[in-house]
Length: 135
Image (cartoon, rainbow, N blue to C red):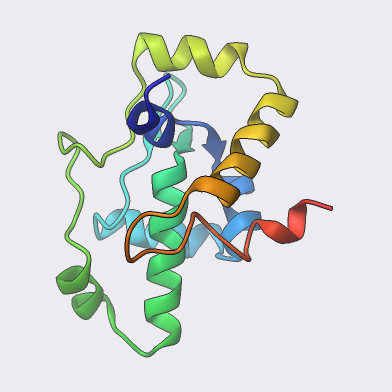
């Protein structure tokens, strides 16, 4: 599977994202309202977040902790629209893959992302945040 598709695959419900980021559901919805993250929605209107969404939420959390307000965050991180490449989408291919994925496979993907997820000038996805879940 293509790395970009894997990172944008809608996988995590809001409850898991709350645990991974230590943000409340209200905070996460607030950032969505301000178009800083754009999770996919299932047919039942449930939000599903991708690796990229979780990473972006952690960036937002870090900026908030440094004293940056929402207007400043919007300048640093551009807003995400529904049709942008960074928006999490549910396609038939990704939905089928998500349904086929077992918890152990998802755990393996998270672990791989922790180990190999570094991009130039950026820390790997949730490094330090997710590591506490792996023993």
